[in-house]
Image (cartoon, rainbow, N blue to C red; front, top):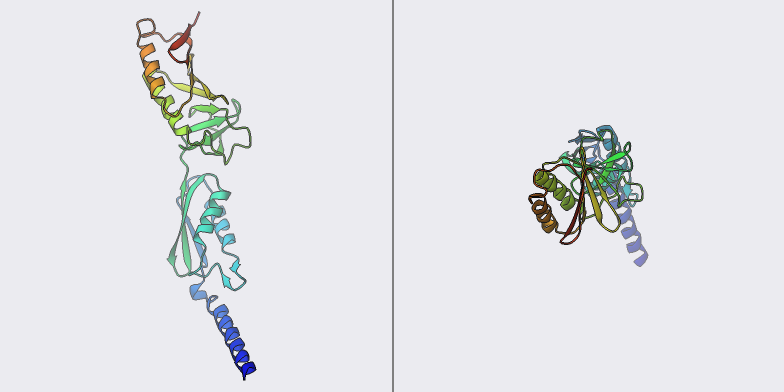
Length: 246
């Protein structure tokens, strides 16, 4: 009697798994189309390929990832972002039972990170370095703080946005155009301007005091209206060293 029950239970399990194996592969519930939207620089065909490759597997050799009820949206999005550094975010949604849409948000460049005059990479507002750039003169050029392969890394993690804002505000205060920013390992920063002139200061979490000090010094009677300085060094607290062009 027990053996009969075991046999019946085993048969029921096999029938259930067989039926499930058949049902989850019906064309009516299988994703056969992947659409990609939102790209301006990244190749949508390559993004589509990564999405389709991610959907090509199965769960425990039983349920295909292409089944509309079980598509791994998070895994698809992660694989796309990992394969394309320019992609900041990818959202995967159903458009029907047999198709999905991958909506891509690409990173917006705000500055460059450079290893030399000729070799630069685009960075977004978070300091994420994501691709080489041929527009070397279009943005402020940063360097330093990254020693490994730059693409896919973050320049000054958690601190780039603050520094970049400070650079913009400083340039506005002085009426100059920023050109390069060199960040040393000890957080000493050298900001140079188009034409001539450098500012040296120490990077901190809050540069408000430094900006006020710069504005005050350059508004003083000695420096007001002068643009011929070689450098102004603000790294030593209340002591400011200024050298003019000879």
